Amino acid sequence: MRKLFTRKNMIRLGFAALFLFTIYLISSVLSIKSGHGIDQQGGLYWQPEDTIDVAMMGSSHIHCNVNTALLWEEYGIAAYDYSGAEQPLWMTYFYLRELYKYQKPKMIVLDLYSPARFKEDYQYKWIAENTYGMRFSLNKLEMLACSVEFSKLPQYYPSFAVYHSRYDDLEKEDFENFFWNIEDKAAFKGYTPYFSISPQERREISEEESGGLTPKSEKYLRKIISYTRKQGSQLVLMVAPYPVTDDDQKTYNSIAQIAGQEGITFIDYNDYYDEMGLDFERDFNDGSHLNYWGSCKFSKLLGEFIAASGKIPDRRMQDGYESWDHHVELIAEELLTYAD
Image (cartoon, rainbow, N blue to C red):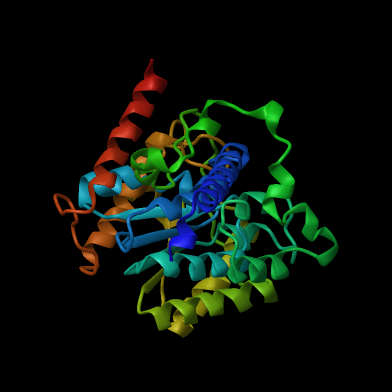
């Protein structure tokens, strides 16, 4: 046993530890950070284990529109926006599998904008945002296998091969991605507020026909329904408010039929503009996303629904949930920065 702890072996172990620590530092600094999905995906791993009661999933309509700070402050809902820009349902399915490795959410709220708007089997525009934040695993490889044509796989995997040459692009936030920043990392709950004001046209949609849900999207929607049911979580399908089109509505009508067949709650919040007091002149950041003030109105109505379900406890003042209090503080600071 003494031979293992010789001076030479201790030096070797020291160099090995230093090498691994250096690799960690380099990877943490060079990895791509983005509030369009990468941060939401990577942020999952910093959350206190088994504290997320409600996982909000889907496209950017989640992390721009669902104000997790308000949900906590008003209702004590421990929610996390686990989403990515234009995320297709097949990627959402593998996100779910990753989520349940670390959390046991009581409710999954899934926004369905992406399957209504984007129809391709391979959706490359924002795929990086839905990939780079996930840790290496068989689950990640399976997700890529159904999301990327084999010839294009090297563009997305391994991630380090993509971002290793970012030296000229580094910014301050690249040096705040270490384990000793865990308090701020855990306080990030996925929500990325926008503060611009872009007036939009309020559309009254009366489309009653169904259609537009692609076979691949339907396949993975049903897999999501089956998977959450096996996990014992309540699945809520919804559409966050935005200027919807007739073609979008056809897809939502199809999804509503599936929800009815499966006994799943489906809420189209485009039917609740007046109830939430949504102002189309002031509550949108752009033609698709709510701004901060719009997100407050929408999240309040969503929070009322979640609280009324009776299945989600009020976690305020409970030990282990301090990161949500810190989250509220960070969003308040961001609002003050905008006001200044």
